[in-house]
Length: 114
Length: 115
Image (tube, rainbow over the protein chains, first blue to last red):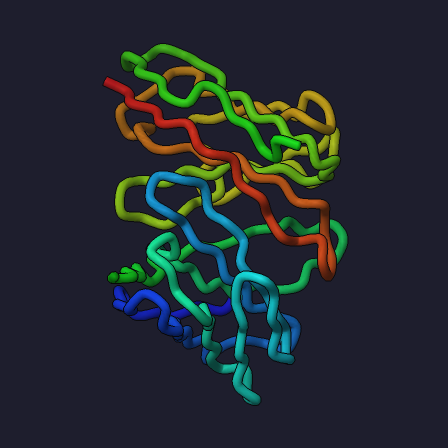
């Protein structure tokens, strides 16, 4: 699985967009980019994932560069409840017989301020 | 629809005691997982069950055993607890493999302290 690099921490003002970057320069062609977040003391929560194209859902947008070596998670209007650790994870699409492993790094600690 | 539930929420054990952490999901998912998270660290996979009737080791399986009791339930057992097993334990499930099925849903966690 490709390794990811994220900033240790970021700040964002409430109501503004939060842009969380992730570098995954060793990503291979069949590897997906997943984003999860963990609000203090809770279980991780799935946010979004993508392979090549940009993706959007009710929580966030995922922008993947053309060379796929980096991506950005965008929370369009951050709220105080978005304060959490955000994990960028890259892993291979599995063939049958493999196992579904998520490798969580240290993540980015996002603090949203009033 | 409760999602993934875990019991107990908190537990204190003495070194050498045994206990079983319970996990259940009501999403009809095929795959289930056990992770541990130490303070300030990311999650590490202990064991997983790709489908009912199968289990396999993850990154840190030593000191643990698991049982996939049925499709809904996946338990984690500590036979002889050690202080190094003090951690927060998360159970997760996913529909299965392949596009759109690999997203994992996590339970609220069990906080375990081994004295």
